[in-house]
Amino acid sequence: MNETLAWSLIATGVIGAWAWLWIGDARGEVKRLAFRVSMLLLAAGVLYAGRRAGIFALVSPGFAVLLGCIVLLVVVGNLFGVRFCDACGRMHRNLRDSVCRRCGLGLSQHGLTTRRKRPPLDPTDPLGKKRSTLRH
Image 1 (cartoon, rainbow, N blue to C red):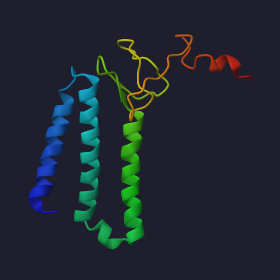
Image 2 (cartoon, rainbow, N blue to C red):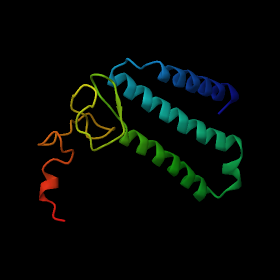
Image 3 (cartoon, helix red, strand yellow):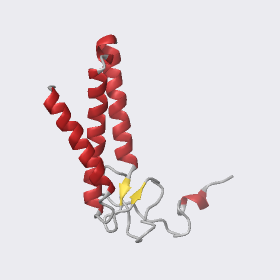
């Protein structure tokens, strides 16, 4: 990767982070796309910085692959655990919630799908009917 491409990636990341702060009124799809792009740019920046610092030259190829897998695992974990409401755009990090706390619209099952989570039978009980069947 040459210097021009590296600086353009850094500039794109900075502009993306700045835009991320200002899309507070955007819909959930826009925020979801911005979050995914910013996470992928952050992961690319971390790997590029490690390469520029010479970390990958100092370690064995297996450990370099392991470092890349760890970065990928963190990115996918964040993308899985963060959901956005389609109507109001609120970010939800709690996978137990089935409806948006701001507008009441149903949320997706996790951050990597748009399939809706079924709301609980009792709206005051986040676990629904499962809690009544458990024995203590």
